[in-house]
Amino acid sequence: MKRAVSLSLGYKLARKIINLFIRLTTRIEVHGLEYLPETGGYVIASNHLGRLDAILTYYFVDRDDIIMLAAEKYKEIAVARWFAKQLNAIWVDRFNADLTATREALKRLKTGGVLVLAPEGTRSQSEALSKAWPGASYLAAKAEAPIVPAALMGTEDSKVFPRWKRLRRAKVLIRAGKPFYLSPLPRQGREQALQDYTDEIMCHIAAQLEPQYRGIYADHPRLKQLLEAK
Image 1 (cartoon, rainbow, N blue to C red):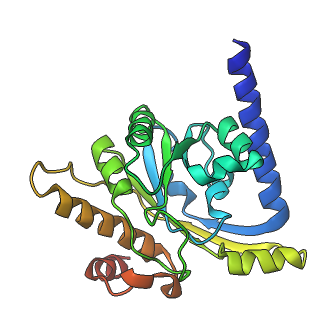
Image 2: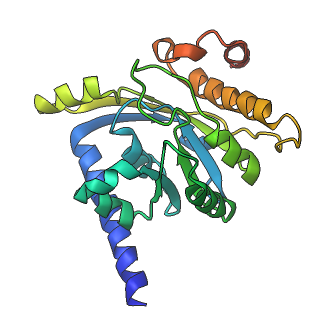
């Protein structure tokens, strides 16, 4: 019982620290909060521009069952280790097939958690959308969970850190789009289906982004369809 209470207090403390930090260091404009389900499991799929991205979810998503994946390299940093523990994050090996992390994320998602993923896997070097990997589409399709595309703008390290050095708050824009579903994975042609699903997710994200952030998906036919439907 003491352990459960301790974890609960640690979680609340971690979120309060994150929210205070964001309020003090950023000026955030958020659109589309009405698209976030209040209950039930779903996936938030976003682009990945900078180090600030990961904690932003705890600012604009009012849920206590957020499922965050943390890169194992941050285990070497004491502060990151503490936050990961309090927030019940899942450590993941980004460079190998991490079945343990995948199973745990899928289990929590199926039981009603909010899984936060950046399909690109790492920060974009071009500061625009780069090649995405199929992990997000696999988990969403297996769980039959809705996907909420989220576009982050202004979180690039090249913009955030210089403003902080001048004691100025970073300007961040977040746009969430309407939830959508992926069809169950077929028994045959699964690899191609995952690629198609991944492109679908990235095009939904791109549709929420300003043109300069759309990167390699800027000319994708599916993106053009989504933009025309807006």
